[in-house]
Image 1 (cartoon, rainbow over the protein chains, first blue to last red):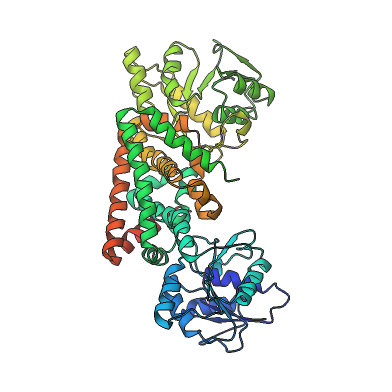
Image 2 (tube, rainbow over the protein chains, first blue to last red; image 1 turned 120 degrees about the horizontal axis):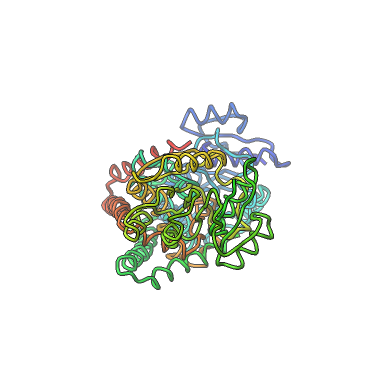
Length: 271
Length: 271
């Protein structure tokens, strides 16, 4: 199998690094307009070579660019003979933008989202085992070829991932809650404090705020692309904050404890 | 040195476990009205015995009860010959409550706060090395005896901690920002989502929300005892959320990126 990785940053680099170890993979080619990433990915041996265009004979093309650049690549590769998949955090806008432009979805395009990442970026931070035991969500549409979905699913399973198939709208609603909102809150929290506060940070602070070290550009784009589900999730969060604030100011211990207990009970369900 | 630990939960248990290894410590006694904690602390060998009252010959008494019970213990031990210290997360209310009751602070009482903890509770979860390389804040007052502060400081240093001395009001303002607010936000976040969302949680979600598994009772008490600094910190957080929401809805990318970049730059200052 010949693989092309478009976008050799942290996620693309991790796909390449893990794919290297698969027995059937004979070539990994990188495509990246970021010369530093391309040079680094080549120097690290993540890709065999970096070129400007996706080779016609690639069996699998992985689009690992920033989210807003994905639709253009899918459109550009609409007639490519291989299976094309992306790894973007927001799915509906990809499908909508491609369909608005082409009037259809290319059947060999499989929208994917591995729930794996890091606050670091660049191929030099690509972990060797980023997808092991992590969930990868596939959001194929009616037009997507079942054979293409099978190949994509097999590839992710070979990298050690667990699979879940759902529609792109449900994906975006869920991820607004479990990924985009925590990032927004962590950024807002870190923006609201002072540098002087940092020396009084314990383990709780550090874990809570780790994701605020993520790339501002990547995340601002994600917030924009998933704006409606994100602001809906933020509304629900704001309602809980308002009720905690009310309980605190009015001495309603029963209400405060009820909210905290519901939260703790839910969090303790995660092993 | 004979040590008495009042409150043999996770923190009290960790103090006992670490103190065991100090050469000068000849006896560790537990005092706990929670029969399960007392039995467990004894069974684990954290304390030699559990009794109902603090022995008169204790050289060091560590009050590791929930925060709201600390003032009563300080008042009860006002004439104790040993050094008395607490480990509470909120300091001003302890000093204010004791002073309101006694008209003074006992000179041998040293208010302490180790910035170390866990979302777990009970002596069975007391880590062996909880205070190693962690900051312990001491908030002595003018009335506090320098010898008592020295003994407390030496004890924490022997447990591997780093020390910082500040006044109780500054402590409460800082900790509202770096500890109490993140806990409030994590609880509100976990209360705002559904059980169905949990399966879509990645590493970011897990780290961000870990502290929401903490004890609702302990944390609601802390929020109440530090209400004014906490709501002031929450106001500043809300202002950042409002400006991100505005930027998102009005397409002000420069403003959104400014907030996210400020946050990421600050968070990256933590090694």
